Image (cartoon, rainbow, N blue to C red):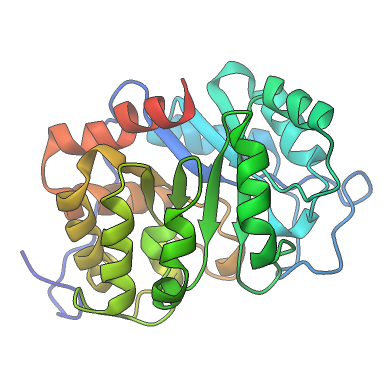
Length: 286
């Protein structure tokens, strides 16, 4: 096959079908600004992207399940995420942003609504500090929640010991989110592999367009990292579109091509199906 960067590299075609139970493990829903005010810390401008618009993506890609992730735009106001989950029904789960002021009663109500993770976004626009990670992870673990973490993967060596101490499961966003391309010998990537060894860490193979320098259609500088992760822990890899691509609003990627990128990275239909359906069913309790 021709690698990216070659003038003869073919474009990736949309997949013809997806396995039953295919799950998109990371999307955001944005509602009317009059109903859901944007936090002053929002890293991106917000345009309305309702559930109806995402349902069209589901139909096109054959997605049957979805995880709605609280966007940084709304801070700790999870109403838009919860309303989207209610509209989507039993095919959805959610990840919220909550801080130390939340009560156990409120955590219980969020759990009953389908929330099963707390999001730590450690880049521009995040609202929870590193100092909150261990205490909040301990609190939400009592409700069966995991920690979802997005950070610059190059900084993982400084955090790996504290991450290994977390009581529950850990989900790392966006193939480690290395903000500059790294090789498989980079300390940050080695730290990510070390996390996978504990049996409680998962990785979302998602959003390569955010960090890749080689670019579409195959994003192979990210793909080489993804292939190593799949080899290390195929049972704890999941896929996500990151729709509606808030960091790439001016030039959003094609969601079908992002799904087909996973097929190219993995190159094994049965393993791809596991990543798309079986693994997220276990992680998110579908």
